[in-house]
Image (tube, helix red, strand yellow):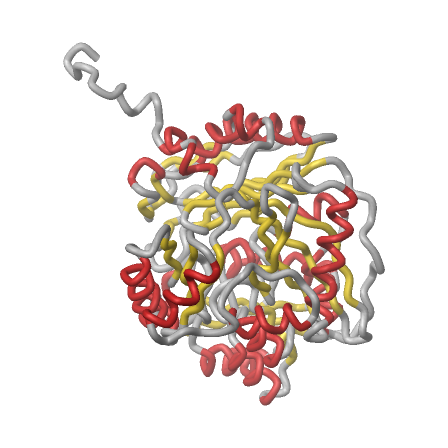
Length: 463
């Protein structure tokens, strides 16, 4: 086992890794930018090193500075968390070259799954269902249009090196294809430095289902259930739950089996997720693989009782998996991401000083956060403030507990998504489990605060 782990991240995930290391008896090193000097992960780590200015490229994305911090502090392992360098193959290689263990998959595995076109081909060879589409990147718009006609409209153009909805455009018909193709290529090039795109069939009302995968260095690969991540905005997840309301035990067995085949196809080591789209007719398709711990990992932890971060660390240390199959699922779990954003203003970020902070509590309530009263939300990074996770004996109890928890969760000084999340929990369609990835497009009224916004056409003076 390791002696000292450096956490190459910030915020709530850095605190989460520190807690897991403490339980394993390991010392920790926090790295921080100048903007994060007062952050809690700096306070609670055993050691800390400033790695540069506020800009991520000069701090959390600066590989030489992070490696230097690990060497100065005497860390023998690095946990990347999620985001930043978590899926950076060069970082994994540099760790290995510096005799520091990267707590995650190999650089080869990251590269294989990081290129979406290569990942699709790898899954097809492994017998995992993939969405009908081009076998690889397409450079010419006219050639791509010919292939799109064969696939059948609507289609989606995706960045081969993309993720998080960037470099992705939908073409509903022939007329809009050329423009969507060029926009996707331009955005892919500017965001990822790679303008390669491919084309695939666009599903009208799919659910986004991901399977949690664990693989060790002894050749064992298992899944420990699915999470339904269908409540999204522009391909960014907002609410996750497990088990999925749409997944039966028989479907779970089939989808889980495909997820395990997908991970075994690249001899996967570590924690990761196989992302799938589940169509209305029960057909499912591989979408991508995330070769890291997910933001929503607490959902699976509460549902199964397995500490995924500790499992990650032990796997990286060469230990076998502590579980060999999916354990019994314990009720239902829902997670809401609380961001410093204003949903009524197109989810505009809301940095600033938090003046009041009152966390929710009660049976079945978990809060993963790094903020406190007096904390200043910086404008340089992701706006995630907290993850609120609630469990219940069934979905309805978990949903009601989430409603109550959101009502008692007070954050003042910055705009947050708490009121919006509360409206989703109360929505009849959500309560019935009638959700898919375009839920918020159909329920757009949830984005507006009914108290703050007067009814359309109302006389303001009368109001």
